[in-house]
Length: 404
Image (cartoon, rainbow, N blue to C red; front, side, top):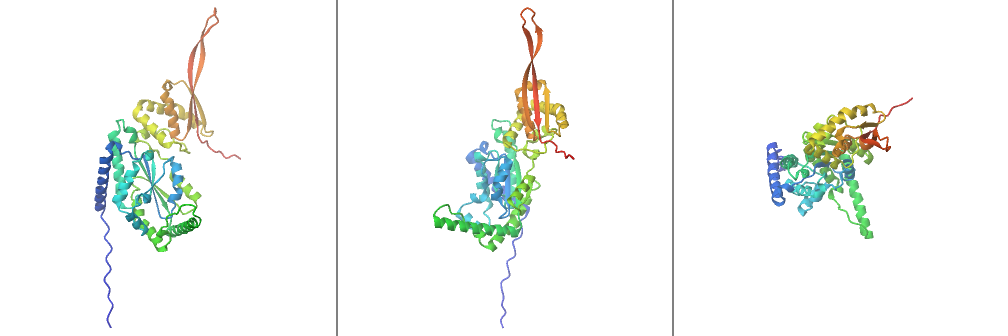
């Protein structure tokens, strides 16, 4: 009886060496950068001052939580969703099969998008990087942004080339949760589209095959674990890394995000600015309001009015903080001073901004007090000198004391 035979299975492709990945990334990035520079000019390669790379497993809630992250960081521009950038027929076919689009196309489209003026202060990028080549391109982008900053630091363009800050944020769910959420989303989209077709009211939503087929949903998750997860993990040693447990409810995930996005001066301020401010304690509660503009002003003080800036910081450390520490329970301190440093109006602005950056609320109020110096017996006129007194008020969250 004849025996059945089959062709031996093809061996799995050997893993690529790190050297080959780096070389490919350098070639791709150099080509994309060269084209950008040729078409826009080097002085117009103005990338966002803060970049948040938001990654996560399918169904982890990136779209759901993006608005919350934007609010937490004080950003107002819409996120850059990489999957929306890749809308060509070829890219769509690959995505529908659960695969990923080529690195060169991703890098080219993304870098050009980031140069739009609306992203000047900061941006969230949803779904990047996803491969080791893209990871290396992130590092190259950071290096090129640093080079641009040094190059334009003492030119009229310096305000457009701030110290770059990159955050990696990963929303994580297990495979079971991911597949359940993908399929639930697919059912909701199908129901929505059926209602739109029946009523003629509303817009049709995209129906993804990965949201209706269990095996494709599983494959999509495993692609994330095998490629994207490792890619994001490899950036931990280079940029600040936020791992978010996204298994729970929306409220629980938001609390996890807040805990991970605690303030870190070393990542947002220019190193020189941070060094000058290191002696001013950080308040336990930081209120993010107009964060990017505040950081820009502080960086400007440190680079353009360095002497006055350092004097204000020293004044705070020597004259103000001892009083503030004595009022740690009440959370309110007031100091009256005639220090001549405040003769320069910019010193008051620096004083307020420094305390705002550290998480306090400060007020500088000038009071003019007339002090009698002489009295004319014949006319009854009183001659006075004007004394300038600056009333400095600092408030912050006070200590909660248990009584009883």
